[in-house]
Length: 297
Image 1 (cartoon, rainbow, N blue to C red):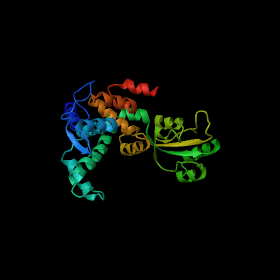
Image 2 (cartoon, one colour; image 1 turned 30 degrees about the vertical axis):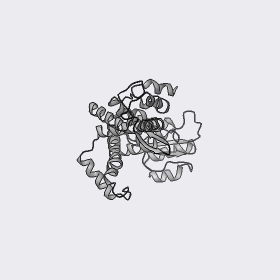
Image 3 (cartoon, one colour; image 1 turned 135 degrees about the vertical axis):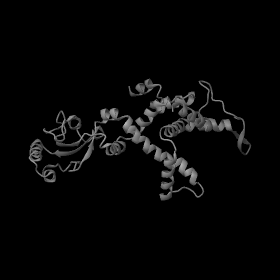
Image 4 (tube, rainbow, N blue to C red; image 1 turned 45 degrees about the vertical axis):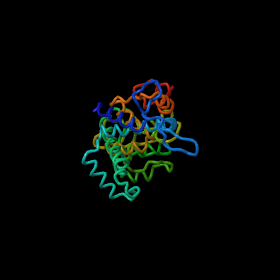
């Protein structure tokens, strides 16, 4: 599969004049002196077009092409994908311009389907790392204004009092958390103390967490009671995926692409594009992890 991906990359890159077999020197393109169009007395060649394309969008187009190559290598464009794409096209209110059905399906709908399926696959392939990084659980969180309210709420839940009754009586007016099951993860670090996230993730049994929780330094003034519903990643994978993808600010989407670029040995052989990515998105230079480390320092 790695070999197929490299062939696809080479074909796609050369067809759009983004990569070639050269290394450190300027990229050579076929028929660079061929005139594309003329304005007044000035003519513009294929070589000039290439230079402008590479200068202003070379790096972004390179990543786009690499993404498409990964999608084709990992997910493919088989019969089931084609059937699903055609069905979505017929159901869509945005079918593109008249006469462009095939282009719209091939370039818009199929990549969209592939991306969804690749993310599904990523959450299975990287199960261990995702659990380690995001610590996802399915839980309920009750936020209280003071410690006494939290203690009373905890006692009431442990004694079997109706959960909605407890929430109505003790929940802070400022709370974002209702009597609902949510995905608790490190994506909620801005609204939930790390201690609460870690306590739910490290709990051995489902049910009410047997302690009142707060910030480690109690600086927020808020206190929390947690109810662990499930730690079963496989059982809740769809819910976890949907929540993490929507709340991770593109982090998971980027990590997904980086993971599969690494898997297939993605490399840049054009120095100018390499330098542009080194400045803007060094994480995509997956065979040079030291560049990302430099950026983080």
